[in-house]
Image (cartoon, rainbow, N blue to C red; front, side, top):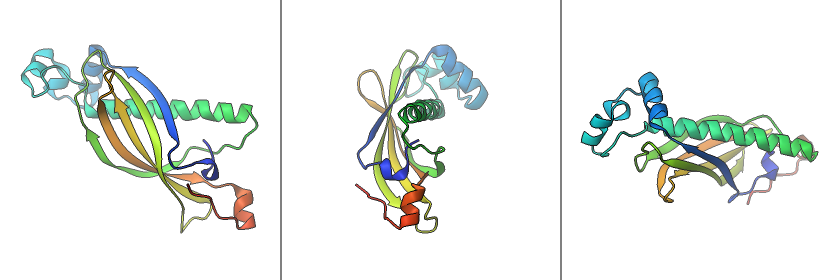
Length: 169
């Protein structure tokens, strides 16, 4: 993961995409969210969604997986170029999670994260706080998932020692 000083408001991270299958929808729902509209096609047809749908939690968990995979690839590329990297950010939480449209079997969701705010931590000078707007879009370009997340991101040690403030875009 990039260091705090290497991040800019407006940076966009294309995390990847995932196609939801009927089998994966049922498997996730059976273990974690056994609402009938996630398990049974007939129950899904009778629901307000008109078809069996993926659990919103399933859609969000796939974002998490793709985000971790993205950061792993980013870290490998930064190390290959000899650029500084840091451990993953620690998150104090997420908010405003919205499941905007249902996700059905066969839908491919593309996930994206955009930095919307950066600020140095007042209580922990070795960390900065980064806020991302995260979203998923179906194959028609319709937003299906949206939420904000915040993470502590390490600052560059030499900038802390010299007292140089972080640049925030």
